[in-house]
Structure formats: C-alpha cells, structure tokens
Image 1: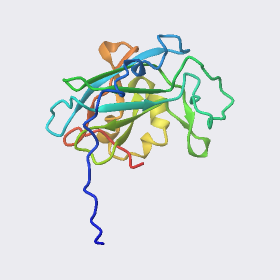
Image 2: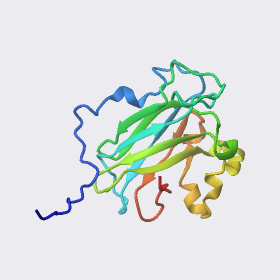
Image 3: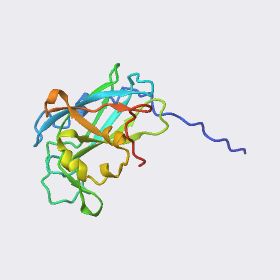
Image 4: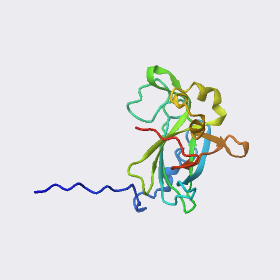
Length: 192
C-alpha cells in the first residue's frame, strides 16, 4: 500500500447554517453585563486592500474586573454571570464586522505582570491554511499599553500600531479595528 499525502485545505468557505448566530456578536447579553459597554467595529481586507466578505472572527476577553469566564481563571476577582467572554461574527459583503462587548480589565501575564486591557481575536478566512491570532488594545489606554509585556515585545512600531483600536469620532464607546491579512499595513499576528 502506497501512502499518499493528504492535500492541504484552506480555512473556509464557511456554511452559515449552524454558524450564523447573531446573538454571539453581543457579549453583554443585551447590555446586562457590568462595566463600560463598547462597540468594536472594523473591516477585514486582503493583501490587495479588497474587503473579505466571508471571514469569521472570534473574540475572547476578560470581564471588566479582569477575570475570564473560564473555570481555570482562579483569580479572586468578581465574576459576571451576564458577561459571556466569547463572541463570534461573520463579515458582511463589504468585509465589515461589529461586536458589542465591555471594555476588559487588566489581567496578569507571565510572572504576574499586568497586561493592558485587551481582546484576543482569531481570524478564519478563505485562503488561510490555519487561523490567525491577534490582539486588540485600546488607544485611550496608552500608559497601560506602554507597560504591556506582549505589546512592548513587538519591536516594529508600525506593527505595534496595527493592534491599537481607535475611538470612532472621538467617542470612547465605539472603537475601530481593521484587520489586514497581508501586505501594506498588515495586522500583527501571533504564532500561537
């Protein structure tokens, strides 16, 4: 018997049946979660700058107190039964997405050094052999960002800036975070 390697497959396309659950785009359970409710919105673009209309984005984050909704987070911080901590959304035909969530609290990292409030994002899209992992930090938390051990480990200032969500029209309740899959302005992705 001759062994033949399996052909590689890309991530996607996705079948919306079973995955399209709009309620997963709101991590606050309709605004019932504790903390500052915010919106994260943006666009996913490919290397040519064209919108990616069929990407799937997932986010994972701590609550406003800096505690994850996970049994392995044993911190003595307050839990929030109304905060889900996980969200999923598809991009629309223009590559746009939108999450409603709360601004996360700081969480400990390696050696218990506090990390700046951030949101972990995973990107699944056609043409990718595996998903991409990145983080969303907040422009209005600059002092915490400067001390963040992960963000400060990125030597290239331009790459570091791709992880910063900016307030929309100066408002602190809506943030813009675009994802560029490759090329000019490519989002910094992590090898996890």
